Image (cartoon, rainbow, N blue to C red; front, top):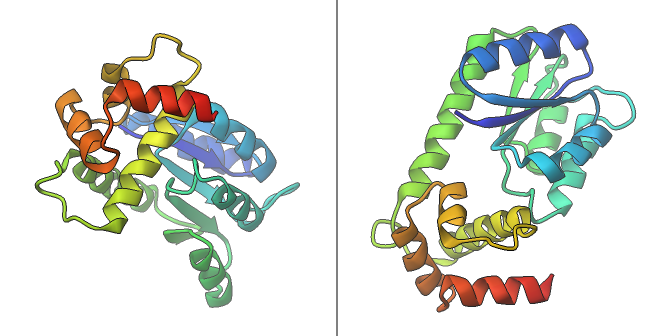
Length: 199
């Protein structure tokens, strides 16, 4: 199951997508434009965003640009829905961070399969322990981005425990402890205190 934010101004299409994704077992929040979608991000923290391009108030391109400015949201994969099969538009979206396009009209099965593939990939990456994952700057950035996003979302919990953070990050407590030692040379308590002070 994935948490998915659906951003689409066509009420009928949005309701149809929500219905099918809910039946498929996903948890859905929705918005009808980019401005409302940005507000939704702060309280929902989706695993995937499905976003139309042509929308009122703030279109999909402007929304993605704003999303990418926030380090807590940069790693959330976004799939565009578009009525226009324009190479120029596709390249623009890919250049600023979209991972895929689906051209309307589309089969809902195509969307579900792409979501399932993304979800499986993210889950497999999360399960990799330090010994299995190749060392390098990319992996360091990936882990630090993920834990900072998680701490940011859970920071209001004054009794926050390593178990809660590990559960949110979809990994075991022992794996999270190893990652903290490897990438921060700190334990969870010290990292949390430092993060709170920084905020």
